[in-house]
Length: 285
Ligand SMILES: Nc1ncnc2c1ncn2[C@@H]1O[C@H](COP(=O)(O)OP(=O)(O)OP(=O)(O)O)[C@@H](O)[C@H]1O
Image (cartoon, rainbow, N blue to C red; front, side, top):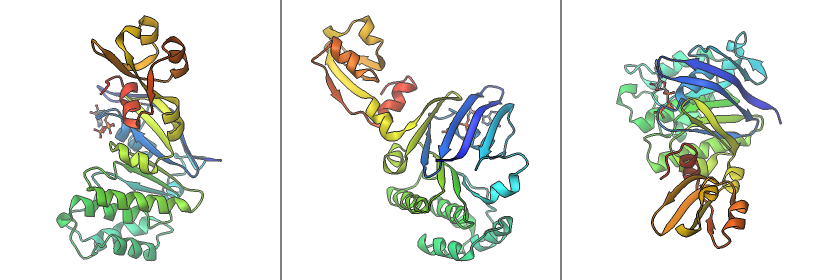
């Protein structure tokens, strides 16, 4: 399987924040969820990938090509959605589309009309009068109407109601049915990941701390519970995150077998992705 997107050793420095040695890949046929706390560096990473902001070092390869020197041809193959899209508020959607469409060699008016109809959007409506959900759908219609093979989206479902979110996720599922494609999207909504992500990349304070298939991630971890008297310093160290009271403990571990050997009576449950994410970023629930 080829990689659609490869980010290697990306470093970007702001005054009070740095992306440090950010590396991950998006394999063909994969939907990757990009997660992390507020301010962890998701938008900065996405902007650096797209060349919207510069970087100190690092390599970005899209469809096996460096962004530098291939910007025009690569951007033709990428659909981009930001959570606050750069639209001219005073224009109608149809006018905005007329500005965007000529930027793409493979703009497909039929696809655009199909998505506008699916989303029940009327092109004559002025952008300033659109609700957040309508704006997001319009952004998605634009991103999906030029035969893009890679979708990069920054929080495409944030602030949307469950019905619209579900519709957008279904469309992404449909989009992936055609081979050779990939989706990379940031989100705070863990149920989005449950529904459609194949792999998960977790960023914390500008560093990638997990890059893993979703199912493998969940299989590898367990929430373990037991009596407080069973814990000693060595077993405590086997948890990523541990909450203990006078009576019992509960924690996330990737070392279930070792813990079972030391404490045969522990209870082990499958954690959800949020449990695992919080354990890795060190905050606990
Ligand atoms: N142009 C800039 N100049 C200086 N600092 C910036 C700039 N843009 C972003 N930052 C800082 O970089 C850090 C990461 O911001 P970023 O928007 O990438 O986080 P995020 O993970 O997308 O957060 P959220 O989930 O809240 O959207 C923040 O501390 C932010 O203040």
